[in-house]
Length: 324
Image 1 (spheres, rainbow, N blue to C red):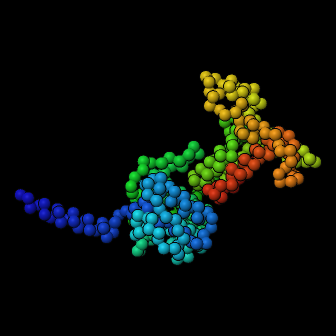
Image 2 (image 1 turned 60 degrees about the horizontal axis):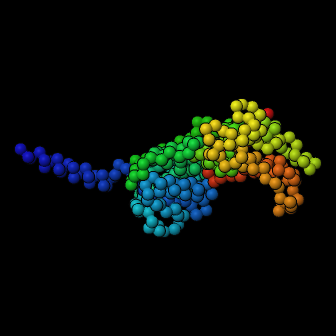
Image 3 (image 1 turned 135 degrees about the vertical axis):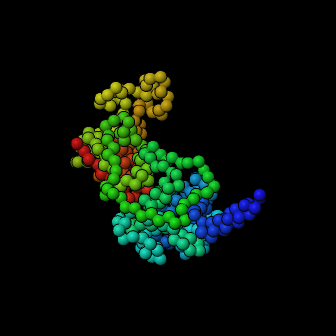
């Protein structure tokens, strides 16, 4: 009556042994992440991003090392490594990177061996970056303009042992058209807001940002004969031109919400603070007028956009401004 249990136990043992020899999945948690010693900055950044998110997802740190350095031992699984780079920077894996990927395509491919390697690669660094975020999306992460959505932490980060995915963007230009001239727009953004925006755009696989601004806004201002022509400081709730919020200081906002805002008016720091310029420009004579609070507000608004777009993640994004 109990004889069927023996064949069942034998089959279970065989299945377990087969899984140990050829597992259906590989665990990325704690795996060492490698890039070429002379990898481009964007490739190195992609490797660091993978390690950063692996830690957030699994609470296990992954070492990030050049290919020719020995494993430091911080990785939990020495039988698996993640290789990050281009066909040019990783010549040993060049045959694994299809020629058809283009500049922004990527490949996620498990290369068997001891150790096994998960290849995150592209023909160009921009494709490597996209492959890194695609891998993280496969692990349950979501990237949105409002921020990252992370699943519950878990001890294992499993991928199929036969993972072989190659993708190329359908559209050559992918992006967004933020529109100034609203108080719920980049008109009120500070440096940190621009940085988050550009980072998230890159994580989502976009490569273009076209800011729309009018001639009366700070980005249309240009110096001529010692003063600014066209342009003006960014609008605030005090001098906004139309809509329901007009001529209001923060403490006049309804239901006590003004207590949520740090400045007397709602707007970007460049416009809300209206800082007096220094008596003497610390970097010496400049082409750009800097004599009045208005001059200072225009310069600070322009600098916020320029510096905000200069983040490692946004290196592959094009930025343009259109005035009307």
